Length: 194
Image 1: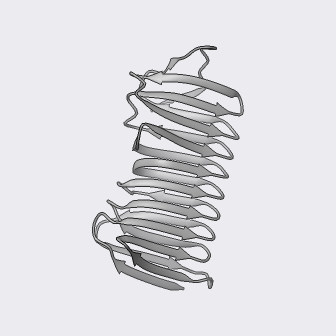
Image 2: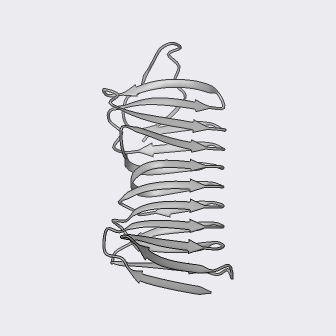
């Protein structure tokens, strides 16, 4: 087992690259800690105000709750408790639980997201498999969905921001807001009350 840690402050910008699976968790404090059981290496660097974690195989990274994180994972990414901005690219599935802000997500497998809000006025979440999306702060959004069943559009509130959900399987949107179907077909897909 290889373990490394580094002082990064309470709101760092962090880039994580893992050849295998990666688990990322937020914690109280100002240190970043990375652990791998593999023998393919583990490196931590700080460059121009950005903390970089390079894991040759699979590993676990714990970092401050307020971190802004970009994750590149060759396999799956499991991310929990990060309150800052989050961008994820995963070769396998991506599982985001109790995260603050999702800026972008692209995964080759199944995607399951539970977040407070999205970042920007045009956000895209893409999954090779099924996609389940629960964004608590989604109040004014235009939804553009493309999944196994076809395409559909909906509007929540005024539709100021655009949320694009694309999946090779089914898309399930979880919201406590009313979703209004849009032309030309006035079709809505799978929506759960949340």
